[in-house]
Image 1 (spheres, one colour):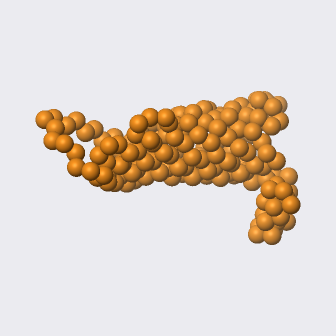
Image 2: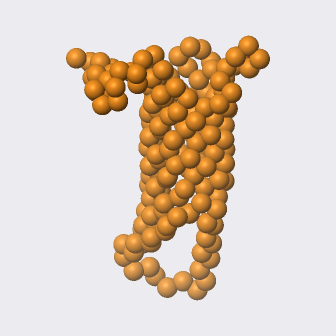
Length: 172
């Protein structure tokens, strides 16, 4: 039994036969942006509602890591008057971690965005979205004592912009 058959079977068993009809769509996606950084994930749609899971990082010395989980709602689905895609809103939770030589920062953000998904073909789409993210928690873990500094500039921004460009490929 392949992965697709397993997912469809579990969906039918758990959610009932109505859920697994042609309205269920699965996508693999790659993205570039903030807070996504560079990474990949998966998106599952049921009719106009979706669930997105994403992992991202960026090649720097601080080894940042982003984990995202958000829900999506599509509206204005492609039609004769708007044939190239649909609008969507999404909201979710983001966990970001960044390590330095002396400490590790751990953040949790709430995220709200609006975007437009351009349908490139029946299988591929390009999503451009933006919004705001609000800091829900921040924990700084000391890894080793930091040397004394004459002047320390530590800026905190509890509300940040978020913007991303994602390429999705339909799996089923």
